[in-house]
Picture 1 (cartoon, helix red, strand yellow):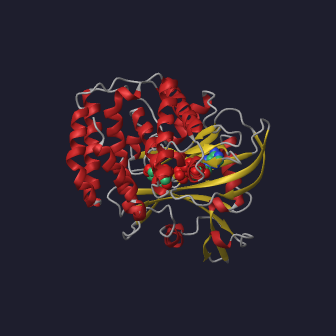
Picture 2: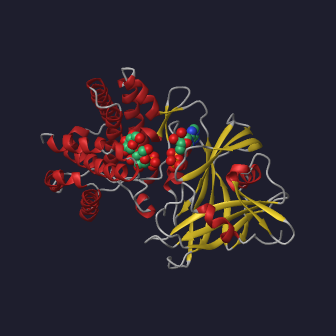
Picture 3: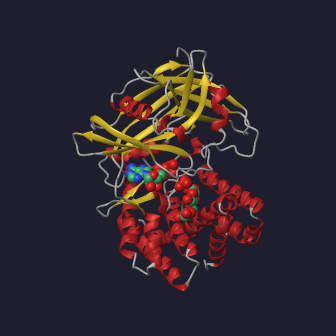
Length: 454
Ligand SMILES: Nc1ncnc2c1ncn2[C@@H]1O[C@H](COP(=O)(O)OP(=O)(O)O)[C@@H](O)[C@H]1O
Ligand SMILES: O=P(O)(O)O[C@H]1O[C@H](CO)[C@@H](O[C@H]2O[C@H](CO)[C@@H](O)[C@H](O)[C@H]2O)[C@H](O)[C@H]1O
C-alpha cells in the first residue's frame, strides 16, 4: 500500500454520520486539506484533515484512519470501508478503535516524535516526566459528543497506570485552552486537575490565515482517574436521597477559588478596559437576542434583563483573567479519594475558539456552577426538597469560594446575577436545540432572576 487509499471518497459517508460531525442538516462540502502518518511496521496509520465548507465558518475535522490488509479482530463496529486498491482488499478503520493507532499516538507523545508530513505536520510533546514504559491495552471512551478519547492501561515509573488521550475532532488555529490551562495547572502542582502527560501539535494549510498556515493542538493525554465519579451524577443522587451536600459544595467553592488563583498566577490578571467591559455587555445582548429568536418565551423577560445589563455598566468590574469557561457539575469529577478534579477547560462550545482563549471574568465560572446546582433541582421536578437542597448547595458553594478567595461576591451581586442570566440564556438556546424537554429549567431560572429584588 504505497499511497493513502482515496480517503475522501471512502471516508466521507462515514464522517458525516459521526456524532462529532457538527454540520448535520446541511449538504456537506468536504475537502481533504492534508494528512500525516505515523510510521509503522504494521497497518498504515494515517490522519486526514477534512474541511467541511458547507458551514458559514468552515469546520476542519481530524479523522485518523488505519489501513489494514486483513480485518481487525473485533473491529467490525469501527470499520469505515472496505476498498479494493488493485492488489486486493484494504480495510479502513476508525483510528482510535484500532490498538495500533492508539499505541502509536501515545508513543509519539511520550517520545516527542514527529509524524510524516503528507500535507500536514504533527509533533508529539511530552509534559513533565511521566515516562511510559509499556502500553498494555486501549479502548475508546463511550458517550462523548464532540471529541474521541482513548483510555489506556499503561506502565509508568511514577504510579500512573491509566491514561486518557483526547483526540480533538474539530480543529482550530491557535492553542486549545483545554491543553494550555490544564497543563499549566498540573505543572503548578495542583491536585485539582489530572496530571498532564503530553500533547500533539500540528500545522496545516489554511487560506483563512495571513500566513496560509494554521497551527493547533490535535490531541491531549492526561492521567485517567479510574474509580472517579462525575459530580453531576453524584450531586443528583445526593439530592434524590435528601443528603446534605453542603460540605462538598463548600469544598468545591474552595477548589474553584484555588484554581482561579493558580490561573491568575500563571497567566496574569488585568483591570478591564471600558472596551472590554463593553464587549462583555455586547456579547450578553447578542445572546439575549439569539435566545429570543430561538426561544420566543424569553421575550417576556427582555426588558428586565436589559435593565439588569444596563445597571452593570456603571459598576466596578473585577479583573480579567483566564477561567474555565464552561463550568458546571458535569465538568468536575469526585476522585476515588474524595477530592474534586476539574476537567474540560475547552470553553463554551457555542463560542468561537479564539474567544475562548481570551481572559474573562471569574464570575462567569461561579455563575456557571450556581446554575448547575439549580439544574439538579430542575431535573428532579423542582420538588420543595430538591429546591431546598439546591439553595443550601448554592450558598455553601458561594461561602467556600468567598472564604478562600477573599473576594466578597455578595458585593458583586448584580454582576453575578447578570452572568447567571447570561448563562441561563445560553442554556435556553442549548436546551431548545438539544433537549427541549429540559427547556423549562433555564426558563424558570430566568423568571426567578428577573424577580430578584436588587
Ligand atoms: N482524566 C480523566 N479521568 C477520568 N475520567 C475522565 C478524565 N477525562 C475525562 N474523563 C471522563 O470523560 C468525560 C468527557 O471528558 P471531557 O473532557 O469533558 O470531554 P468532552 O470535551 O468530549 O466533553 C468526563 O465527563 C469524564 O467522565
Ligand atoms: O458538553 P459540555 O460539557 O461542553 O456542556 C454542554 O452540555 C451540558 C449538558 O451536558 C450543558 O450543561 C447544562 O446541563 C447540565 C446538566 O446536564 C447542567 O449541570 C449545567 O449547569 C447546564 O448548563 C452545558 O451548558 C453545555 O455547554
